[in-house]
Length: 637
Image (cartoon, rainbow, N blue to C red; front, side, top):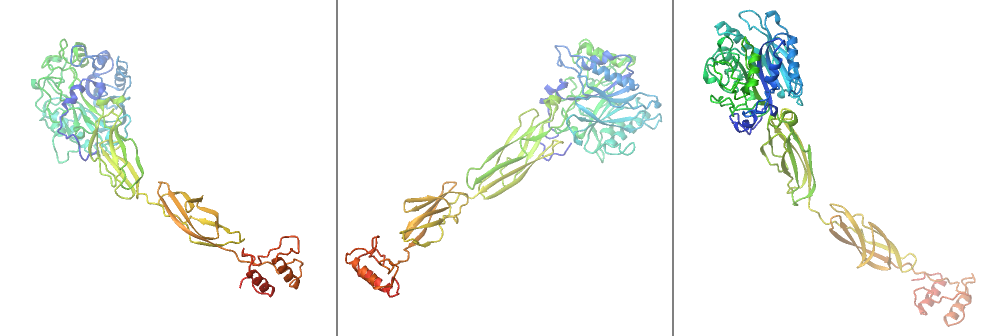
């Protein structure tokens, strides 16, 4: 389980309120069981196993309508591979079974003359990724009697090491002699070392880092003070591989009525005994004791009730034991936990030679985290304008259809501060199956510039411990008016003496912090035209032309350009006044003065007596200009 920087529920938090509804509904969470099915050969008891596992608790009881329905069973006393296969078939063919049971590979160590431990599990919920023999048994008095196996299960839809649950299935040495405890101690030491990361049976046999772990099976221990038990649960210099009793109920369990609700042996009361031992247990690693990631559904501080089997603070149960059978056979008629049919089936499973009851505990698989978007783009806004807001939704996407809403951990996550952005920092939770928790992210507009930040959401989801969200946006300066530039002053000459001249006006030097969308040219208030460049005709003389530019946000500016149109050069008429192509000659002078005096023009066209073309005639300057040109001088002095 990954470390979470700031858990919203401490390890000491009690979850009793949650468990009241959770304890009886196996399909609503993950249920892991341990069961010594007493010399299982597959030759008989199939119907009893089916009833014990999938029989329905009758009406009128606290668990009415419920079934045992585990997802994983660490099984003991499998006689051979065919017996294990038969158990799988038995489970799959039971009425009410999902039909997805499979087993771990059967490992035969029959050379030591004993049955095997194994594991069966539902493939619809779990993938078995490894089976490891972590310790070898033998008949030696200094060794454990049977092999110890570890089964590494990963919930469907998960990939991280922190999502793996490692199950040690064990059947320790029976007996109360010190030599029996010594042989149990050897196995306990190897299990704890293995959970601590030690290769206890050659390279590659250590528990991989990050895995969650538990041990389940027939421990054959009568007291929590036995060294074999203390080795598993006691504090040591290195507690990496330490186990914990999920119901925190130590003591001398054998033949002690204070523990009658958790006794597991012997429901058949073979040999005159009865329910008076807590031989079968499930112990859990420290990562399963909090409320993040994989975890046991129950209090990690409260002991199991000594007054009821239906303890609201725990989901740990001995299936079928209602506490009314201390030192006698399991109660059938009047059994307040499972009713008579299931109770009788459990007795039958134990056989007349004596046997065990299954124990189970309920768990939640880790939460999964997702965000509504991997990037939030706030666009471009003006400095000082309303700060844009975008919503980011964090969702716990654990598969509730597969594990149930109560079978998935609550997602715990932290939102840190985002540089340049306002983030609702803090610790948050999100339950599975919901629409997600929404957070409003704000981009302040006080400062100008391009804003970039990475929002790193830290969660306790082992699949997505960090989620990165890119935040981007631009804050621009407030819109400034454009700068109009009508160009430099222009001077042109009336080239044809028509009284006006064509002029090219150029406003391309105008600028804006946005975009100029309009160029308008005016002569006073009279529009001349539009466009960056404009060709227009202006009269001789000086004209002040105004350029008005408007930007894309509606701001405008003006500039003027002075356009001067100079008059063209004055040209005199030809001294060949009579147009006879002979000049200079006296006849031109005679004819000019004749016409000037009102005589007839010597040629067909009207004669022009305005010799200097200044528009004033008749005048003496025309005569002067005529004789000046006739003498070879200029038209205008």
